[in-house]
Image (cartoon, rainbow, N blue to C red; front, side, top):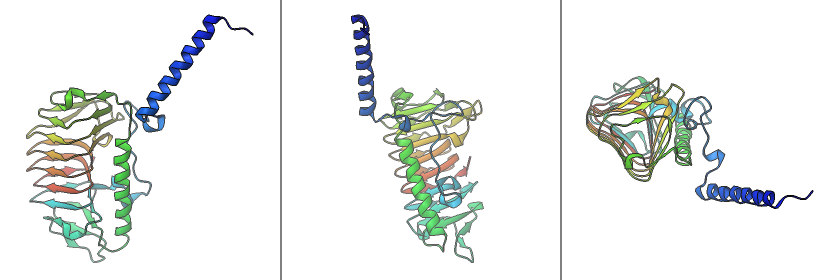
Length: 272
């Protein structure tokens, strides 16, 4: 069969376009595996939990850190465990720890219905924490590795006053929230925020959820520091490569997973 010259040129153009697109995707690191979509709703697929169930996975902890967890006064942590590894229990300060007779965990007035675990407690706590921290780091890498954002450098990193639909948000800058921001979507929608520097929520400002949006489906992957200023309110799961500071009377509906320090000061924290 002899193809018409126009058909040949069309096929060549299509092939050239396809190759160009493949080269562009490869250059950006974008593959279907790196950009999974949410089959249950809008936005990207949720961030992965750990392969080991229970206390071996990050989603069993409200607070999980590697180098220290400090509490100035009066904080309340509800809905899950508190964990620290590889640092020892001596780096959990301001909680008034009371060791259980088994030495597997401690209790604290600041964690009224939960338990506190540290790397130097009795087995199986060290192994569980090693697995949980590994799953936390995997979750961070998963969130950071998503490609082809739905929104790139939105508002030049200033999210104040905006209403944000589900999606993958990528920022090559710090992100500030100087006024209330609303996340609007259904209970199955997912938000992932990739932030290459710091995240700062101003004093007295808050993140508002509407339309059924769930804090458990909101992931803030932050390469720098996170600061929730005094009396502010935050929603979602913080995956931070460095430190998270909650100033006096700031509140959180979500989790803090920090690869260094978590600093609290009279805060109310509730797991989603």
